[in-house]
Image (tube, rainbow, N blue to C red; front, side, top):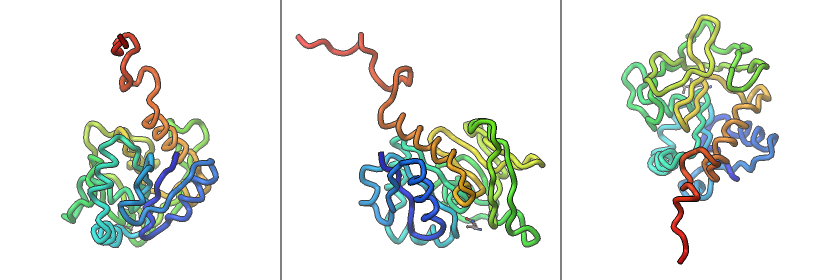
Length: 211
Ligand code: GLN
């Protein structure tokens, strides 16, 4: 299995290293052909305005939307979450509107550009996630199909999942956290080879019998 990492700008190397650490092959994605054969895609942190321009310049928008449509997991961290948001507060056009949320960019203001926090994330088990926030966005609104994975102590939402779309306002890859990448690899494996009970494989008794 190969997982793509959008490598136009930003913190993509750390995602490739995290994938390597869990034994998953990571591929740099810079143009549409790089998406061939990938089972999922990571959109890293960085600068979402620059990413918007580079996604357009390299014609990556529609191919990424198609990959998401096929059910492959897409994981956005920080600027990557902004790229995935259906709505960006302040009226900027959405980039790849795959996640039914409204995000506010740089939501922690100048006073608190960067900070770290230990956050409980139930789907990842008992040990809290050490989360690194860098000029991070926050989720202001979310639609009914979106599940909250993590909040700050004050209740603000910083990690979500909507079916095959995962997003965190923080950078798990900068703190040696591998569990989000493992979750993504599990989702990708399930997508590549759906197991019993997923409803995607025809039931044996319903298979056409050879004559
Ligand atoms: N502030 C950046 C933006 O709005 C995101 C920062 C990050 O990805 N660490 O695009």
